[in-house]
Each structure stands twice: as structure tokens, then as C-alpha cells.
Amino acid sequence: YHFTDLPSFVSGDYLVMFDPHATHLPGATPARPGLKIAFAASPLLTQFPDQFAPYLGTFGCDLAGAYPATLFRFPLRSAAAAKSSEIKPEAYTAAAVRRLF
Image (cartoon, rainbow, N blue to C red; front, side, top):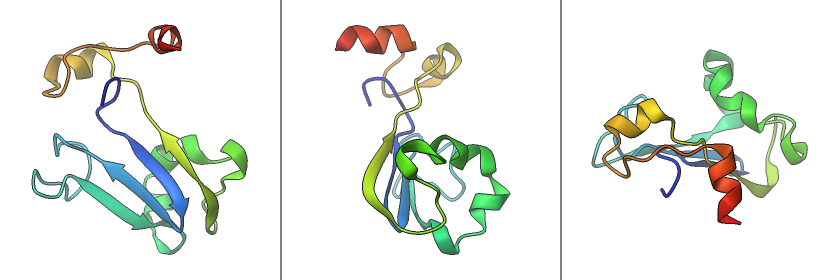
């Protein structure tokens, strides 16, 4: 959670999303702060296409069937999100992340 509050990954038949604040994902609670979705059988792909778009076409991921690897997504914490983050009140830009490496 160094630079994101909403990490997620695709692996096999599943998309896993974490929401430790329990404010962004439907049904997320402090006790269950995430979702594990069998994406090929889920209508969520068509209901929330903007949430799945970053995976599509990346390293051959099409979310139409099992993905034979693990693909992580770490959306950067914006300045607006940093103001309400209980994890880390610091925004990150792409340039700041590049400086880590």
C-alpha cells in the first residue's frame, strides 16, 4: 500500500480487488475488504467496463478465459484520495514511482 489504496490482480480465472477502506467496492466491509470474482462468468465485466479496461490487452489478458499468469494493477493514489486515505496521506505520480527504481 505504499502508493495505492486499491491494489488488484488477475490470476487464473479470478480477479481479486482489495479495498481496505471499504469505500470503493460494492459489498466491501472492514471485515471483508475485498472481492474475488470469477470474471469469465461474471456480468460485472459489462456492468463496470472502466474498472476492467486497464487489464484488457495487457500481456495478452482478455478476461474472456483463464489468464495463465498473474497480472497486478496498482492505481496510483491521487492527491484527492490521499486526503482521505487512512493508509498513507501521500499522493504518488508516475514520476515518483519511477524514482523508486
